[in-house]
Length: 216
Image (tube, rainbow, N blue to C red):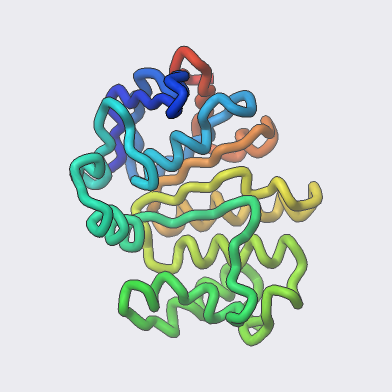
């Protein structure tokens, strides 16, 4: 479903940040990528998502090489095939929980009220659909972000340090929920983390270094 073939990327200064990265990921697989700060983990996620282009190599998502697509085509591919969960939640403060979860459906021109309610129940927030982000705890906001990432049934979910702003208990709940929902939706998942405990919730762990990406 996802194939990275010899991805390389350099900064504008000429310093190499990604070097010959190759990876294959099927639906239902959930992996972690670990590495020191500044080694290029977020850059790799941006390349996978088509937010940035590699200097060399190919990124195939569901058989399409996203490095050959124009900006509009990559945007459409992200909206239809990708889900994102980030450390900072990125919920829209003027939208309710229900509206935040449904946002990818709105952007894709679809409406599935039953799907929104189903996911809200799955994340334990069925009774809080009319609340706003300011009325939620950090753990609750991250659960909303997970539901939003999965609402449109993406092929791939990218999670970048999703527990970085949470206490240990809330973080553990979010990690368990993220794994459960990725598996239930038969999506593939990539978790970028510094935490060995978080990485242990995935199926496989890789380490990103200046020399490349390797099984940990």
